[in-house]
Amino acid sequence: MTKSALITGITGQDGAYLAKLLLDKGYKVHGLVARRSSDSRWRLREMGVEADIVYLDGDMADACSVQRAVIKSAPDEVYNLAAQSFVAASWDQPVTTGIVDGLGVTHLLEAIRQFSPHTRFYQASTSEMFGLIQAEQQDENTPFYPRSPYGVAKLYGHWITVNYRESFNLHASSGILFNHESPLRGIEFVTRKVTDAAARIKQGKQQTLALGNIDAKRDWGFAGDYVEAMWLMLQQDKPDDYVVATGVTTTVREMCRIAFDHVGLNYRDYVKIDPAFFRPAEVEVLLGNPAKAQRVLGWKPKTDLDTLIRMMMDADMQRVAKE
Ligand code: NDP
Ligand code: GDR
Image 1 (spheres, rainbow, N blue to C red):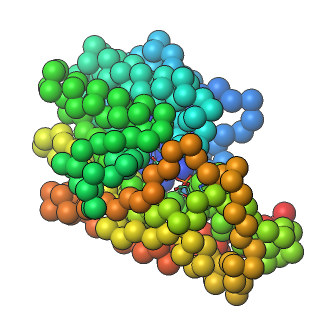
Image 2: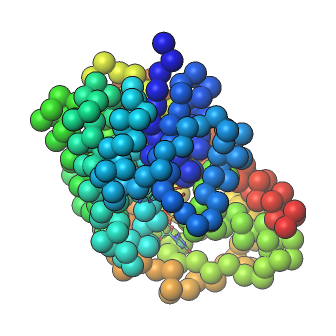
């Protein structure tokens, strides 16, 4: 029997990689897509899957549309990836972020509870919930301390997932994913901002790169590896929560060095510090412990940071050259 999946946030970075993964496994893939005035399917085109998806109009803030998407797709599995996912923007739009990233999860869980209780559910939780870290290396038992409206909203989404699992016996799992990147990463996130700028500087199309806190440390992995962990969570007999990370943390500064080095430039000659890119409250360091995902799911990251940044640099060099 062909399995049916519903992906919210299918036009985002992870949505594109996950859609490809599920299509390759023979799933019928449905995508909830919010109305936009401009094209939002470019990543699906890049992955070569745009024509293979059934699109359903809807918005996480609109419970009726979410309900309709669940009924229409009759999903075996739902992956809730939709979010206002840019941490810095969450201070400018705290209410929208709260509704979409927080309450939106309840819209989806309620629809599943009422109309499709056998459906397995994945929630895109985040290392941003650890925020002001309470342990040097964070795992599933580390207490949370979010530092942004985004982190706070995602913490609601996380706990409502746990609550619906415990209250209504839903197969609802939460993946606490650390930063993961790819050539399809949004340009506002620091890795893509750096690889895009390094490519432009190399090709004489930009002079400098303005960044904020380059001493921040992140545990960066590759999106293509991380969507496999999402799928594996929903193949388990029992729902649960898992940290997905590489177990290595690196400064933004070092990540800049890797990117600029790859095109034969010294980042120190181009990077300028601009207070405009500092956040009202920073998450200084994140470092995940993926031991449980490895033990239970048999999941391991396959791509190290050097390989990842080189992959992104190569893609940006090609794209910028065509502009
Ligand atoms: P993106 O920002 O690339 O994608 C977000 C997706 O959500 C887009 O498809 C976007 O649509 C959609 N969306 C936004 N608002 C709404 C709405 N109101 N209704 C319906 N859809 C909406 O994020 P990523 O792919 O990087 O991340 C996927 C998920 O994982 C997010 O929930 C994110 O918070 C979480 N996460 C990401 C991590 C990472 O490092 N990438 C780490 C941990 C968690 P559109 O394209 O039209 O704007
Ligand atoms: P993050 O990713 O906030 O960790 O959230 P981002 O790449 O935006 O920031 C990482 C770190 O880099 C520092 N930084 C800058 N960041 C940006 N965007 N622009 C800059 O100019 C800059 N200079 C320094 C930031 O301060 C921060 O410390 C991502 C998102 O995908 C979330 O949705 C997800 O939940 C988390 O990762 C895990």
